Image (tube, rainbow, N blue to C red; front, side, top):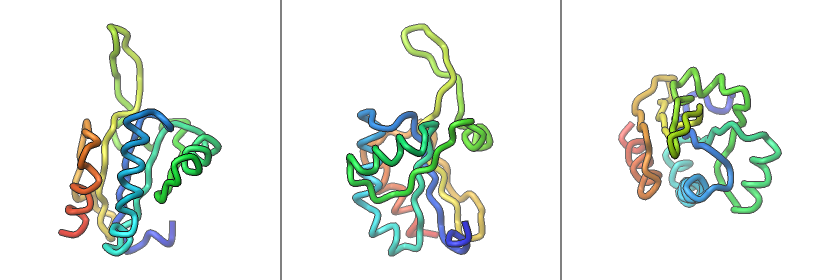
Length: 131
């Protein structure tokens, strides 16, 4: 993590590799990768998927962002995004789609909960540029 010191970090939590919304979000962040780099920010996507799953996902979609595996959900729990969800009346635990912007001093500067994918990467980039 030494190379993150002094840089802004965008942590975006997403439910699952290679699903439609998560793929669109990863592609959108990747499309803005150069601009995030120019703004001295590192983008890291986090899900419960394995490292092997992340590698396949990155290769398949030519992703330009880092992906981190949180198989035991400890990171998601620490950020409060491992939450109860419901679908068709069934309740289960899952990853909330959320993004955290952390400045170069390690302070969380912005949080987006229940993210809508469309336009989100640009919104986060705009926030990074204002740091």
